[in-house]
Length: 181
Figure 1 (cartoon, rainbow, N blue to C red):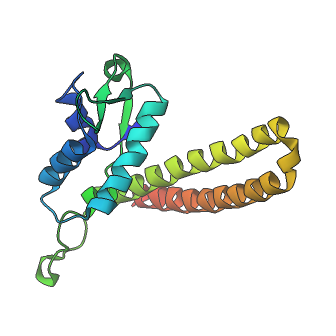
Figure 2: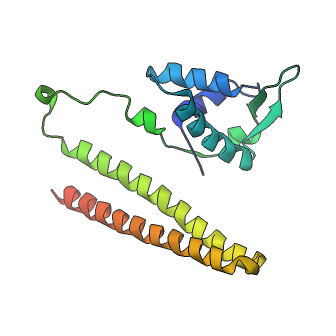
């Protein structure tokens, strides 16, 4: 299962097997969110997801004919991959905060939804952190001469995993308590 922004998925789905430049992707995303974003900020976010999709063979990167620009297009694998949708940070904060007069007690379902969303975020980060620490262990067998450096990185990744596990436990407890109400 590959995590992707719903907006980025929509952009690639609407341009199956045709090349898009980074600028075209960025403009479509900005049009979708109706919000001011810096080019640098959005490019970083897009590049991270595009590079992950390239590594998994879901999209490919090629230089566009008669141009200096690189193009990105979906591969056959795009249609068969199961995606998990996770909005970009700027998608989550698109709405203005409610005015004081509009704030009411959140309904139970809304609280559950927020907690479950937070839990999902932590679980994704936790899986990533575990994979990172496992990779450091793997690299140790490949390049034992980097033992000190790899052990240091491994320790940091494990500590991060433990913190995330604590957060997951806390959110799960809240979900269970809220379900009992």
